[in-house]
Length: 200
Image (tube, rainbow, N blue to C red):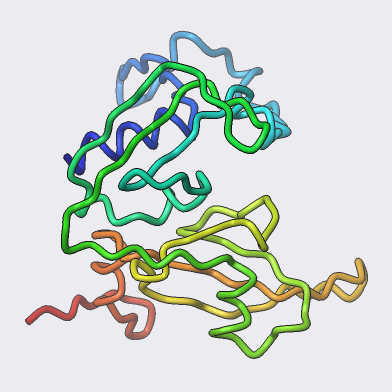
């Protein structure tokens, strides 16, 4: 079930890029589909977050309509089943092109909280403009409406982005969820540049 949930989210939120075949001859790696000239060109990609989901789906958790942003921080191990319905529906004058219905395990209690409320509750930079990151990804959106599952948050790191020349003075709030990878990393400490794992 965890693998299915991760796959569904991956298809919904990302694009898959193929890799070109690479040959190895005499200790050299040779990419048969690329010339040396193309490797020296820097590619600049402008991502339009709004166009990623031009036909949005409605999300329901245990029968309740929720903001799609909440799905990102759900604990995938607590998902019982996912049902995808292709019929279009209208909610609050917005047309959704299908719906994704998620049922969680009985013992899983979701605690929705907006990023703005989270900032006010857990940090001391309430009046400062901030940028949010969740598991390494910058969040573009209305922080008043962007919901996360408070019960599945592992760490909140408060930092800052400073550039006097560009007149940039922002708070940076990095949120880590209780993913298996984040929990594993939290048990590792750095000693003089080397990693040491703390295990019981």
